[in-house]
Image (tube, rainbow, N blue to C red; front, side, top):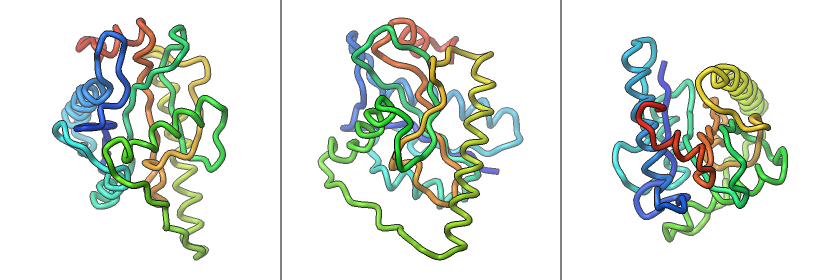
Amino acid sequence: PVVVIDPGHGGIDIGATSKHGEQEKNIVFEFARALQAKITAEGRLQAILTRNEDIFLPLNERVKRARDNNASLFLSIHADTLAEPHVEGATIYTLSSKASDLEAAHIAEKENLADQSAGLERKEDTEDVSDILFDLTRRETHNYSRDFSKILISKWKDAGSLNKNPSRSAGFVVLKAYDVPSVLLELGYLSSEKDLSRLTSSQWR
């Protein structure tokens, strides 16, 4: 089975930046490479990165690479900033047409503007198929995504710090593949000194 790991941002799109200058695109890339190596070493799954270097990828291209590789799971990795420096810990997002809360809506809105930050015009998602098999597949995929989110949260408790509300949902473009279970893992916040010290530590990774 294939896991496609998507290090968010890249190239001209640097993502979030800490007050010390650390960039999200680099932090999530290093984490994604470490995760790929760990999965590969265990030998049960194949792990593929959407980008293997510091390049810009449109959001829809990230989803396409998951589908082209017949991914059993798509895992998008991010590390954002918030106005509240005391907020810390990992959050796992699944797709929802209506955001679970205002913070989830704000995060999704920022991430969905990644293409525009690189100079691309935003295109509306035209994949609106009314076929009942399509709808059943999409529902099953959504259920798998939610199941994986719960498992990831339960495992993360032993491995790292969780946000006080770690399970959230919103309309992220990168989670919209109807046939690939997809979650977005927010490793933590670059605005939190505690999270930043973890995220920049190779030992923590």
